[in-house]
Length: 157
Image (tube, rainbow, N blue to C red):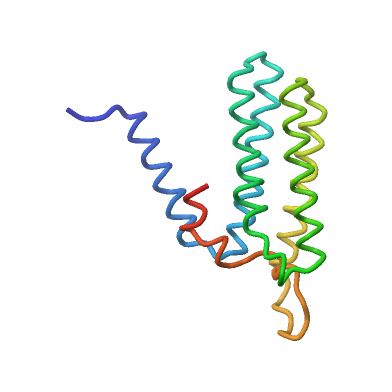
C-alpha cells in the first residue's frame, strides 16, 4: 500500500532539487549546471575505474547533456559577444573530449574536463559575489540568457 522508504527518499530528493531550481536566480542556475556536470564527470571516473562501463557511459552522457543542453544552450551569443562565443567553443571542446574519454576509456581526459568545469564554476561564483556593474558596461553575466536559464527551460534538458 505504501511505497518503500527508498522511493520516498528519492521523491523527497527530487522535490528538493526542483524547489532549488525553481527558487534559484539565473546566476545560481548556471552554478548548479556546473555542479551537475562535475558530479557526472566524477561519477564517470569512478565507474570507469570500477570497470562498470554501462554506468560510465550513462554518467558521461549526462555530463554531455548538461554541457550542451544546459550551459551551451543558455549562452546569449548576441549580448555576450566574444565571451559567449569563446565559452561556446570551450563547451563544444569539453563535449568532444568527454566522447573521446568514453570511447577510449581515458580517465585523464575526464579529469581534464572536470578541471575545466571547476575553473569555470569558480570564476562564475566570483562574478556572482561582486556588486552589480553599471548598465553601460558589458558583464560576463550577459553571456548567458536569463530566459534560457529559467527553470522551465532546464526542465526540458
